Length: 510
Image (cartoon, rainbow, N blue to C red; front, side):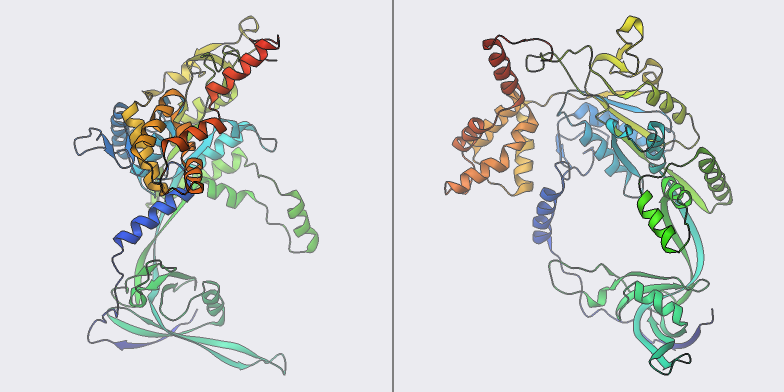
């Protein structure tokens, strides 16, 4: 590729005509609205630990669970040192005690560059691929590869973008692009580039306009739009573009480019057959669809290439976190669950999956695995025919050989004061006004039924209050919600009473 340049030195660095405004108030409001749109754990920003590693009472969206947070803080230090690969962490506790929030907080502490792959135990039972294939994909998604390359690039703010047209030699009608003139500006100077028409097509694909900061690879002609120059920043509270500063140094430079991918991305890029370009090949790929199963041979070849890159210093392996949530479902005999036989409730993962996990954890390329369970002793799925047809019973429904590898962290039910603080946090995030009396009643509902049920009452209660002409939730609104909706305990009790009055079975499944 031939690039012709014209240098134009600059005596002084340009100054931005405007700066990005400080939007503390609007950003807080926008963040609250964004959190309420995403999910219930979006306000979790970290483990909320102090500089001494001790858990703060209320910090980074977390309330309570001080022992679990401090335990994960020690675990986090081991992860950052790279000394904890292959040793899973098991979070155990009743439902609604923050096990998922703890795993997400661990991911927040590790940073956005570290892969975090959440999945539930039921995902492994797919009709398209094998169970071990689903787990392998989860493992590979949780292992990142940071590739570093030093390339010659032309980088700067686009000051000119002029395509030059000429008569089309193949036809008497129309014109074609012969070349394109691109002007790039940095703090140190400017250059005018004369580029090939194929590079102009890449510029159009990136939707580059004057004022954008881009870089063009000198060897391949690849174009990457970095963002909008901050000299074009406006005073709007909400910006559609990402503003970046004017690049420093010369326009033509050697730059280290960093690209983060996962091993699963490499698997998928090499596993899908490209096929032909004819209509039958295209239709065949559309009809086939579905998920692609990656062979072990392909993964071994990719691992060899990755190992070679790591030895050469081109790439760096970044072990991430694989979080298997709801690995088991609680069926504790506490009145409202008395209709379900506890002994026959089995783990969501079966013996085949646990055997695969044992093998995968011993691999040199293993992520950090976090499991969550909310049960005590139960039958391991896949062993129902063993032990005289009773199955093999194990703590948390996990085989002992895998359980011995785990560091176990316990979570405790929230206290009344902690439930009240959680409700206040969600009201602030969702922009709801609630009176102290109504908040106290909701907190008592969280203790008597569950925290999740109390959180679910917030939005319907606000609707009832608004229909009644009030601006905040009052105790009568919460009481009306209880007359319209039932929690799990009351509904199971009502069903048991109805079955008893009808002479139906009170124990076992109907």
